[in-house]
Amino acid sequence: MTYAIISVGGKQYRVSEGDRLLVERLRHEEGKTFHPAILMLGGNGDADFAAKGAQVTARVLAHPLGEKVRIGKYRPKKGYKRHTGYRSRLTQIEIESIGRTEKRARKPKAEAAEFDKPAASKPKPKTTKTTKTTKKTKAEE
Image (cartoon, rainbow, N blue to C red; front, side):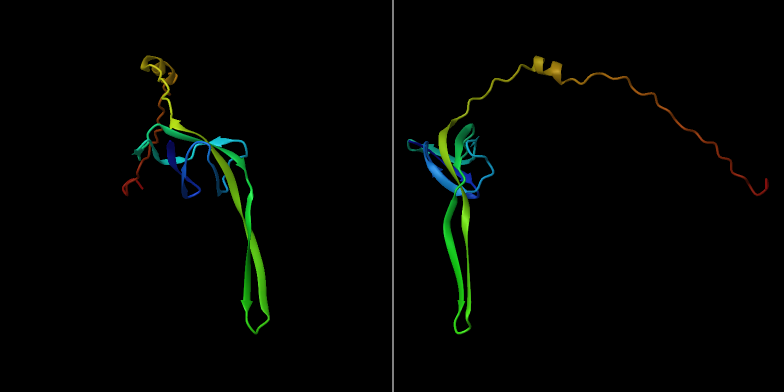
């Protein structure tokens, strides 16, 4: 069984393919996929902490609200009562795949060099501005 430790929203989760998680609200839209940061990749008795070429694909399913949390303040014998509350904004994600990515074949250097060269341009002529100043001496005045 392959699993991964991923970091989403500042927290770490142990996931495997097909898992559904409720995490803190993400900026991704519903139905879109994203690739969370991988901290460790493991399975079959071994673990890889520096998982180069590994990729986890997750899909955003929904953006639900969490349970309502009620907060009450009370001071005895004073008639002071305050009630507030909030609901956490969450994102439900599903892990679609865990695996290594295939490296794309690079272009040969000869082809890449043709397109990387900038177009040659004519050098601009240099212009210099000269000004002549004369200093008068006391004898000339």
